[in-house]
Image (cartoon, rainbow, N blue to C red; front, side):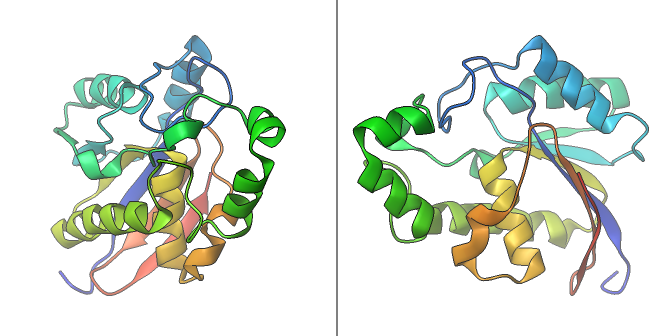
Length: 193
C-alpha cells in the first residue's frame, strides 16, 4: 500500500463553553453552537473507516455521536489532547496582557522555547502528537481525527514542512476541517477548512 493514498481528515472541536480563552487540559463541553458547527463540518463528507479522538469532552462527545451515527469504530488517543497551558488555563489573552504581558509576548514570539508558566512545552506537544500521527498514517485507512487547534497545527506544520517556529501562524478556527491525502511516503493537502 505504500504508493496508495488514503484520506485522513483533521477536525477541530467547535465552540466550547467558557468563551475564548487558553483552554488546554480544562475539560469544557461544547456549546449548542459548537455542536452545530461540528455537524455542519462533516455533512456530506466521504465515510471514514474509523474516528480517532482526543480524550477531552469537547472532542469525544461529538466523536462518539458521529461514530455511532456512521457505525464506525472510535479510538480515544491521549496523545491528541490539547497543550497544557499551565497557569494560563481558562484565562484570556487580554487578561494575560494585563497581568503577564512579557510572558505572553515571549510565547507568541518564540513558542518553541517559551512555554506558559507551569505549562507544557510546544516541543513536548509536538513529540506526542507526531507519535500519534505517524501511527495513524502507518495504518493506511481513511479516518477522521477529532482534536484541538494545537495538535492540528502540529500536524499541518509537519506535513507542510514549515519550520516548527512558525507553527502558531497556522489558522485553525473552531470546527475547521482539513483533508489530507496520505501515503506512507507522501502527504497532499486537498482542502483547508
